[in-house]
Amino acid sequence: MAKFDAKTFNAEAFGAYINAVPNVRLNKLRESKAVVGDTRLKEVFKNNTQTGTTYATIPYFGLIGGEAQNYDGSTTLNPDRTKTFEQGVFTYGRMKGWTEADFSFDVTGGTDFMANVRSQVIEFWNTIDQDIMLAILKGVFSMNTAKKGKEFVEKHTYDISKTVTEATDEKTLVGATTLNTAIQKACGDNKSKFSLVIMHSEVATNLENLQLLKYLTYTDADGIQRDLGLATWNGRMVIIDDSMPAEEKKGANNYTQYTTYVLGEGAIGFEDVGAKVPFEMFRDPKTNGGEDTLISRCRKAISVAGISYTKKEQVSNSPTNQELAKGTNWELVNDGTESINDKAVPIARIISRG
Image (cartoon, rainbow, N blue to C red; front, side):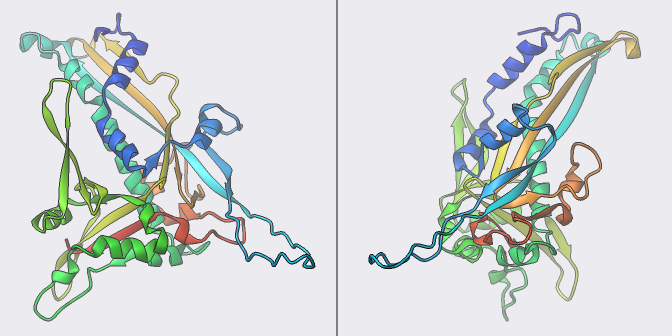
């Protein structure tokens, strides 16, 4: 392993080391098949098959259909044509640096603070990527105008937060039938495609109390069993994260409204398209008696099944989380006049009080 010293730092060796660290959470997301590799993104962005390397419009092939004609020897065949839609896909770039002072090393008897930074890099970028995916989902469910966006949001949202009974608010909480009802409302007989749920810990706790969650663990290289922070609900993988939307509602009875997202197989296409210099060290011998800064950069490409990123409100070559969360930047995949059937989009949300 290369030393954390600006003179001897080997960026390639460091990158290889980081890539060798098991990315447990992403691996589990891939196992759920909700987040998958997308070869189209590789071709467009990583292999530079198009002039643009930050945004692209790619074909989205429609399904065959229609009624079969009678084959009786006298009926003339009238063939149909499949529709080809267009989908907007994009890349985002992020960077971060961590600085540690020589003096900290001196006064702590040689504690390697940069080793601590190194050990957390993978988890840091996991969190950043997850925040970006949540921003995307917020944007998708903020569609309310063009290309049947409002209709999609209504059909793919199961809101039980406003259900009121005389003696209890039990029906406003997720329960044994909530997930199945939500995914059927969104995609009908395609509900079997759903494989991942992302929820707030308040929602998870309610399901735990009902004994509906089963937690997953993994065994590390030292043989120690560790909690993944992942569970399953009705056979779907669950990620529990308090960064999920939790909105305070004021009224006769104040309550908190929680949003739970449900994703199907291939809901998000995800590729690491790389940065020119993903890791490097910068040595400043003057400031604070000497400092080393580890700099990390990444570029990822994302597609959302059945949803097109329009880039209508994006200022720079890399969208911010705030821009990704805007409904005006998203629409159902379409050919300019007709949108795809939203039943084919394996994305849904549940709104509840817990």
